[in-house]
Image (cartoon, rainbow, N blue to C red; front, side):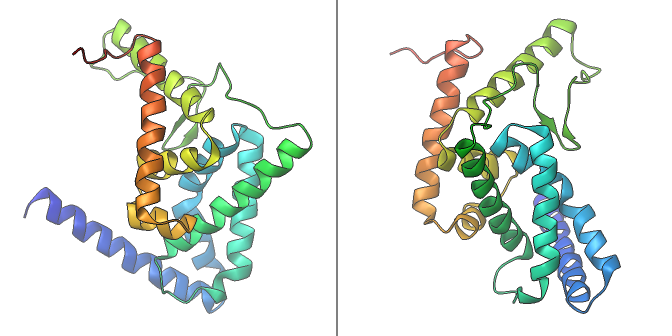
Length: 212
């Protein structure tokens, strides 16, 4: 069996598991709700963190999203993937919070001392790959910091596209469903977002331009 087939089977098995948890949660199982939270807490936190640039706000947003999930779980009809429904709810919650933070003057730009997030959430210090030389490890961390800051300065719609595609790994179809935009619009926004990040890496001398 090829790696691609194995990955597809894993995704299908995970989707079956999640659907079963959703069904149990809709029937009132708090254990199933807890398991759904454990499954999606980190990606939702990471999404929120990229959208608002503040660790405390991201944690509060994550809690708010899952409170909404708990209250609305019975309205989920299964016409889309649960993850797509969840991301749509999370994106709308983040949008509302960003508007409120701007209105009261508390929206912050990217933190210059924060290297970004990992699969376990935001981190202060990056553990170097054992195979990296010291200079290589420093270069990787510097690149992550610059990419994170570049993403944080993007317009909201560009930021959503690049975070959901390149950070969260969602498909174009899933992003379109979650944001309510056409796939062509998502691809256009993603192209422009990546171009802006690339320009920042070029400016910092971390990648080389193509001559000619």
